[in-house]
Every structure is written in structure tokens, then in C-alpha cells.
Amino acid sequence: MTRQDTILRVENITKSFNGNPILRGVDLTLRKGEIKILVGPSGGGKSTFLQCLNCLISPDSGQFWLEERPVDIFSKKELYRYRQQVGMIFQDFNLFDHLTAMDNVTLALRKVKKMDKKAALARAIVELSQVGLEDKTRLYPAELSGGQKQRVAIARALAMDPKVLLLDEPTSALDPDLTGEVIDVIRNLAKKGMTMVMATHQISLIRTLADEILFMEAGVVVEKGSPKTLLVPGTRSQGFCDKLNSLSGEGI
Amino acid sequence: MPEIIAIIKDALPYLLSGGLITAGIVTGAMALGLILGLSMAVGRVYGSTAVKRVIGIYVWFFQGVPILVLLFLFYFGVFNYMGLNLSAVSAVTVVLGMTTAAYQANIFRGAILSLPQGQFKAASTLGMSDIQTILAIILPQALRLSIPAWSNEFSIVLKDSALAFVLGAPEIMARAKFVASRTYQHLPIYIVAGLIYFILTWAGVRALARLEKTVRIPGYSNKGI
Ligand SMILES: Nc1ncnc2c1ncn2[C@@H]1O[C@H](COP(=O)(O)OP(=O)(O)OP(=O)(O)O)[C@@H](O)[C@H]1O
Ligand SMILES: [Mg+2]
Image 1 (spheres, each protein chain N blue to C red):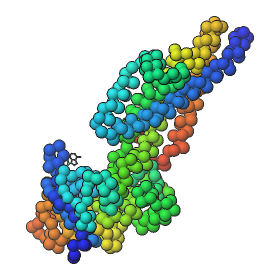
Image 2: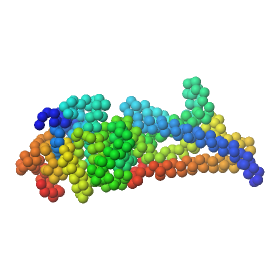
Image 3: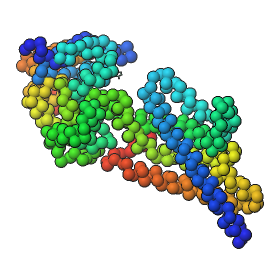
Image 4: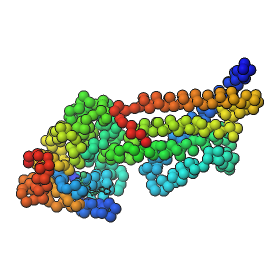
């Protein structure tokens, strides 16, 4: 891998809430097409880190490079441009409740990318079809199932052509029988080479998709490595996954 | 009895045109309140500490002082002092507008705060600016949620507008008082005046209920504010 392959690099991200250090210097380097998965106990800082990565939470310190160009996160203009390129999927979908599935996807295309109506609609249809929702475009979020909502959220993020996608437990708010459809979409993204950072407790995703697992605890990455090297007896990650296993009964 | 009917018949056009003036005052006041109140709500939720404080003082002042005092204070005091030569009708409209703005600011602020915060985050991750997000995502939802409370506020402002007669604005109440004192038919005249207020309230509330229905989003559960 050459240096140019690096899409996103952050160094020494720290964040405290009311004097409690939540992130104590986290680094991350993401190459094109790479998938990194964050695991670790609740409260370890996974969500905080993911939201620091696109400055939804502004970190107390930290440097950012997008394709090796430094990002000045304190310049609003630069921040808005940076965020366009770093999509995010949330646990609880966060669809715009007053807009149809279609309009959820077209809104930012029109407002941010300044596309005309026709082009935005065409793009939205493509993205919604990709996630299997071409027949639900006129429905409002309240009329969709959890799995469908999350797929709209994914279509909405992908329509912006992000270089990196951040996913924060994309399936954990879903009923067990609805996780499959979202997992399939994520697998498809991986197959197409999407660069991703994902926090998840889905063992099957961790094992099959991760290029690298980052085990986060108390605001630091305490272990990292490929599933092969990390998911072996004796590591923290394996111990953690064992626990997940016994909870979910899912094989690893 | 026929005499009373004749008096009412005579007075009715006069009272009804007072109704038009009342309707004008209330429409103007509610519109001013909407623009000011919405801006203040946004400032109070998303503004800097200084902005929040200034708006807080404004709301506190207009909620704390009786409308009658405000009417005199502005009509004979502030407006005069500023060299503004407003008619009674304009002065009443502005004062009622500034007062309802304080209440509307609270209505809209409550609605904004009741929205799930995640939608703001989601818009940010798409590269939308804060202003774009507020205009395209927050306000359309907050306004919908506010309609019932706004309708309530409308009926209060309509009734408060009767105080305008103290400044001599020729609205329903002033005209009713004038006719009643000339004809000594207080009871029937004030019943008619009351009916005109009632019809205006009813029409406005009905129209807003319809609006609420028209803009309702399928499946959206209005948690209320
Ligand atoms: N806005 C906030 N204010 C104060 N404390 C916060 C805030 N956000 C997060 N925290 C704290 O930061 C810590 C890390 O939270 P975070 O949500 O990042 O953990 P997580 O690893 O995502 O956990 P989970 O697996 O439960 O999602 C927690 O102790 C949490 O209480
Ligand atoms: Mg989390």
C-alpha cells in the first residue's frame, strides 16, 4: 500500500465530558477499501470516537487528514466540506421525519450538492433501489419498518458519494428478524469496496468483514489486529466476543 | 322588542366593520408574533449565551407586564418618544404582536426542543450547514407541532385585542361601547359584540385545525408540546 491510499487519518483524538476523559488519545489510519470495526464494552467510547471522526462532537484535541490533506475543523466551511465526504449511519436511523424516503435522500443532494430536482430524483432512485426500496420511495419514516428506515439512511448517506462511511451499531436498534436485511446491505457495500469504520456487536460482521478490529476500553484502543490474530483464545477481543456469543447464541 | 331588533339592525354593519378592524389587528399581531417569535425561538435554542440572555429578558418582560400597561407604555410613551406617529390601530397591532411574540417564542422553542436531536446530527453528517438544517428540517417539523398551541394563542390574542378600545382604535369593543352608551341597549349590543368575537375565534380555530390536518405527516405521532 502506498501513502496515497490513505483516505482518512486522525491522530491523538481526546475528549472529556465534564472533566471525565472519555477518549484518551485515539489514532486511526484508514486506507481505501479498508474496514475497521470497533468493539469493546459499553461506555468504552466507541460512539464518542465515531462522532469525533466527523466532528459531530468536537474533540478537545486531534489532527485530521483527508487524503493526506490536513483538515481545519475549526473552519465551518472546511468542516461542512469534510463532512460531505464522511457519511454516517446511526443506531437510531435519524431519518427526517417530515420527508418521504425519496425526499430524505434528495434533500442534501439539492441543498449541499446543488443538484437540480431531476438529477437528485434520478440519483435517489438509484440509491434506494440499491437497498431494495424502490417501491417505498413515497412513504414517510413513520410508515417504514426499522430495517427499511436504516436502509433509507444508508441510501441517503451513499447518495453523497462519501469516501468513508461511519456506522454506529447500525443493527442494534432493530428487531432480530430485521437485522438480516441491513447486514446484507452492509455486506454489499463491503463487496463494492466502501471504506468503513463500524462499531458493532454483530459477531458475523466482525469476523467476516473486519480488516482490523479495534478493541476500545476506557477511551483507548487496547488491542488491535485482524480477526485471525485477535480472535484467538487469550485476547481481550476473543473474551469479549465469547461473551457476545453466549448472549446471542451466534456461532463464530 | 321590535325596537331592540331595529337598533341591532342599525348597529350591525357598524359593529361588523369593527370586526374587520379587529381581524386586521389580530392578523397583523399574529404575523408579527410569528416572525419575531420564531426568530427568538431559534435564537434561544441555537444562539450564543448573550443572544439567549437578551431574548430571555424580552420574553420575561412581555410575559410579566399586563397588556393594558404595555399599550399605554408604548402608545403614549415609547412610540411618542421615538417620534413615531402611529395610529391607534397600528400601535395596538404592534404591541399585541410584540407580546404574542414572547408567548410564541416559548411555543416554538418547546416544539424545537421536542424534536429528536439526532436529525440535526444526521443533517450535519450530510454536509448541511446549521442554517440549512434549521430551515429545511427543524422548522418544518417544529411549525407543524406548534399549530395547536398557536391556535390557542390566536384565540387569546383575539380576545386581548378588545383592550384596543382604550386607545380609541375603532374595533368591535369600542364600537359596541359607543352604540350601547348611546342607545342604552347594553345587553343586546354586547351580546352581538360577543357573538362577533365568537365567530371570529371559531373561524380562525377551524381554519388552523384544517391547516394542521392538511400538513399532517402520515404515521407521524404528534407527541404534543
Ligand atoms: N454528551 C455526553 N456528556 C457526558 N458524558 C457522555 C456524553 N456522551 C457520552 N458520554 C460518556 O462517555 C462514555 C463513552 O460513551 P460512548 O457512547 O462513546 O460509549 P460506547 O462505547 O459507544 O458504548 P455503547 O457500547 O454502550 O454504545 C460513557 O461513559 C458516556 O456516559
Ligand atoms: Mg455507542
